[in-house]
Length: 483
Image (tube, rainbow, N blue to C red; front, side, top):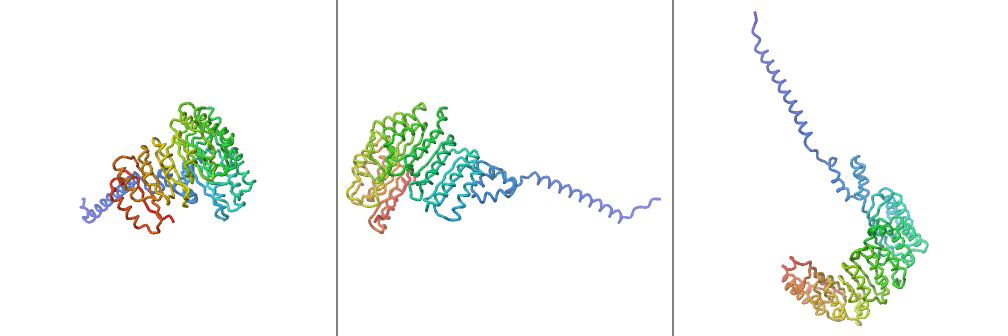
């Protein structure tokens, strides 16, 4: 005979079964949740894409990059990306200290480790305190360039500025060694260069020609393949300031080997008819309409500027380079006769900068230059920059007339003794569309310590032409005490 089960036991068994089912459901829910979490994208520094990490690492200093490379293998691999090491600037001080010495050693270590990736290099060296610092820099540069050669570096841009090798701290032996090291590197590795700046080197004539010969020799086989080599060459203050380079026939001969130049910067002391002819032939040899587009010439009163350059030489260069834009900067030469030999009518001038000294001189006048020389470029001048200490004369009317005559003038920068009404009339002409100026920068000199009255008048002018200035102009107007 079967007896019915105990109700309490039956209830306990049912509860156990329900609890087992609930636990199974909970386990299944947990497994499904873990699977869903695995499917979600993981966030955090460890999972950033390589392109994002490279963008972050780009802004780090070298010592921070070294620390970041030790975080994990992934970061170490990303830190070895060539894009992080292609551009580098080195600033070396001319003073003696442990920190400065470490900077030199760091540069050499950088060349040995990452020189194969380097494409854009800039080296700046301030004036050495003594010959010991100069020799240390020369040895560092020699080792640095040797390391670049060993690593197979492919520099595209090289800038070595402000060495000033004509200073007393550079003894002859150190200077000669540095020039030999630089010339040797440029001769061996200069074939890939597209940009070279040796601004402020201040070499003597034989040393300067040696360096240029090395660059030209490295570029020669490229020209044989009808491909341009260096397109941008900056030789401003490349030679020592007192040198009359224009009397040397070797300089035009060397420049004739630089075919395909697009941008050239040099001093007026290098300029001659032979040089302009050499540039015309070099640009023409690549075929077509010529490559030279921007030709910047700087002339200072302490540099030789007595040579005669004929206008026909400029016309010949402009014919072979139809896109040529000449930019001339003249410092402290405002005599109309001397300026007339420099500023010839045949020059396709786009930018003109005239600067006087900061001391008042009663024997010169800026008016002849503004009335007889500058208007010759009324059809081509686009930028005009003037820094005049004209406390003994007013040039407001002449300057306004020049602005109205130059139909293509878009940039005007004037630092001079001017009346506030000049600025008011200039803005009125711009409002009436009689000039196409887009940039106006004016510093109005005054003989007073306090400039509250002038500042108030300038504020009134700005309020009258606020809409024009805010919508169409890059505008700056300030008063400045000149005592």
